[in-house]
Length: 334
Ligand SMILES: Nc1nc2c(ncn2[C@@H]2O[C@H](COP(=O)(O)OP(=O)(O)O)[C@@H](O)[C@H]2O)c(=O)[nH]1
Ligand SMILES: [Mg+2]
Image (cartoon, rainbow, N blue to C red; front, side, top):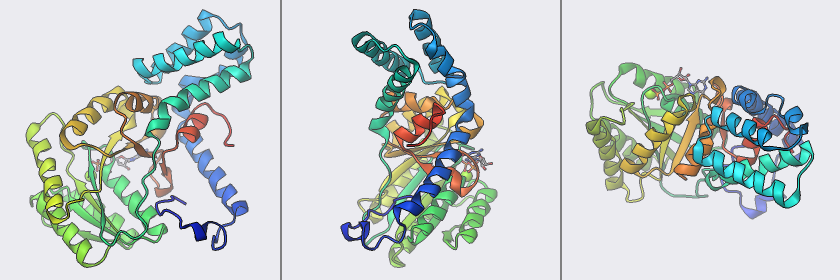
């Protein structure tokens, strides 16, 4: 369901065990979960939007819409882009009904997110572990996200190994081991205080010798303002590259969506230090600041791979611009 594995042509039709008719309910349940998860931001953005749009289309209406976008933490630049696009369309096509205005808003929002809507797909037969280095500040949701990812990779029939690179806290290792046990996945760990780079190196080496498909490395929640900590995670990255020049295949930043615009400055600093290839935005279920994804897209341009809308494995979903916007605007899946 996650589509980690690129389908071979022949699998598309003949061998597909899940016919389209069966896929639909699963997908619609998934969309409902997304819509539910985004409802707090949705309330800020679209409460009574229908009736607002049925009013006369004038500057006051645009001001109200702009204010809502800003309140949902969409950020100045992305808000401006969305507003310019809508007002341009209104002028050109003289949109005068609520439905058309809603469509224009949806399209303008999708346009901002489309460039970062790029799912994580694994090569068909890599012949080496696809390695993912997970970084981010304390409490962002790294370890939980790794556990959820392990679950989904296993469900897609990939073998997985985890490396407990957060060596600062004993609890962090146990937390990862718990996820490992639940998903029948080996966890490579050393004692608390061990060198993070050495644990991750061991993990990648073990994954390589055992022919594992995916190796995911956890790291400590290093404060992005503490240069020595940034240095340390840079070292983890470098050491992985020593074992396999292509490693890590993915440098995945986990940010807490509830921190709104703050997450943006975190992302910028991690990107400068490490060269991110993907972002996961967690805890969108607990916040009205979910609009920060637009700011991330507009200012950073790094693919948003997944979003978290709850604590269960099913609450981690691949990011898709169109579903995200439709869920946010309280519209139906189509
Ligand atoms: N509601 C909600 N909670 C989440 C989500 N992702 C993670 N969490 C919670 O956030 C807390 C911190 O997560 P953790 O993975 O330990 O963060 P880490 O320090 O970055 O490894 C835990 O209580 C998680 O259950 C999410 O998408 N939604
Ligand atoms: Mg952790």
